[in-house]
Length: 407
Image (cartoon, rainbow, N blue to C red; front, side):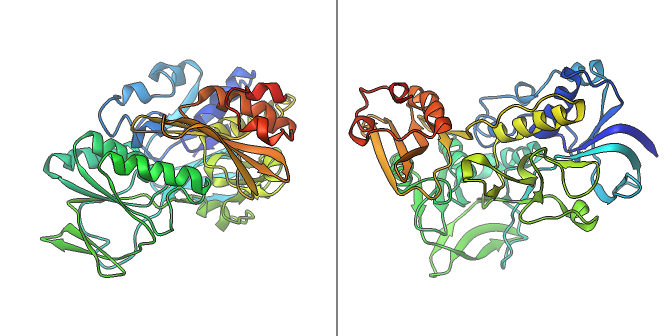
């Protein structure tokens, strides 16, 4: 058994950033990262965008140069999937039988891509987009692919669809709800995004659920919908969200509700165990104090710094406004704040010119903004959201009035 002061499970943004922050804040104890992948920590956002369409190489996605981890005396253990945690003994056991002792454990495993569970779901040609290996598998098959069906109209599905259209594939998006991005934005942006993808030649089928998959010689050939419609598919990408990868800690007794429940310092209910990133559920000031899971790089990085501060005795940074981003075709979409629960919205700029933003209000308070090719609005909106300002509606609708004038 190996022993370390700190063991970090997960080599994504949260885990890698936490290790780097601990060293930056002066922590000198033994530290290890256990990752179930075979690659050094890397950026995940390009997977569905520039890595899928071949614009970016894998080396360009590395979070740090390979020498960084050895230079900072951070041991990275590859291909290590944690199977169990003994919280009382401060030990973890991996699937290969290796055991690791810890003084502090940081759980940063993110989530697993949800898969289909219907007739035909074991056929070849079905893929998800979560890891480098996933995208390598897609790219290896594209030479023999003409028709692609993307199941799910969230960010991953839309980004993958845009990348595949860039590669000349015929793409159909199937979304179970009545609009794309329904869980993260309002109707106005959803309809604009749908129109933008259709203008690029992508078909979008809304309010549609997959009944089964039909194949030929073991490989998918059609997606069959509940209404009987059949969509030709040489390849299928399933982008229907993730499930938090938390089973070992749940089995060890950690409180879990759609993620590991953590306190203001990201501590779980088990002694000396923290959880950060996509797998952690935490009360958030910009969600009215509600406990939520935020699936974003920004949240992963901030929670990583929060844990590093707590362990090293530094004062924690003040929570910042949540933000997200996506690129699809010629659109740069940036989101600040959380629009869920808004009761009013104001559009600034021109949809026709593909440069506008949508401000979301709740009881008159500016709570969120979606920007499309409008980076200045996105940047300036953060200060308004942070201060809970009630802007005058007519002025807010005028794109000639800069948002920072309301601060």
